[in-house]
Image 1 (cartoon, rainbow, N blue to C red):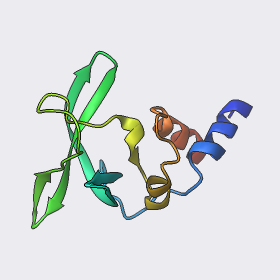
Image 2 (image 1 turned 45 degrees about the horizontal axis):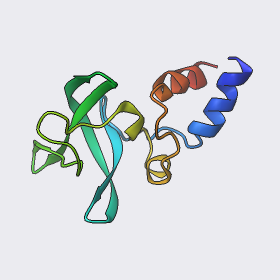
Image 3 (image 1 turned 120 degrees about the horizontal axis):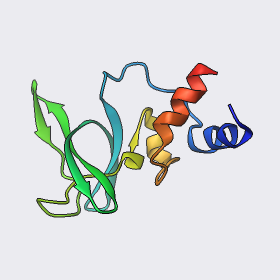
Image 4 (image 1 turned 90 degrees about the horizontal axis):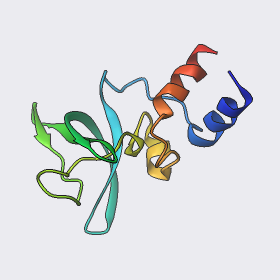
Length: 113
């Protein structure tokens, strides 16, 4: 692990991963009508955009997966970027790595070393 990676991990990933998350499940800070809440989501749709990849979100509700309204975009750009997804609730609430799209690789480095 480089010094730079260590600094990024300390800054972007202050909390530990939530072991209760299922494979492919993340936390997302949903903000609709000015009310923020942290929800568990699955990024299932993939929207390749010229400025990066967006992901359409779904959550479990009543035994099935339902689409999550992110509050912005249209039918073709209604996703979120990887930097908007988190592996623990506190980091999500505090938006510790918003804009850091490589946080998952940092988490892997952290866990390996």
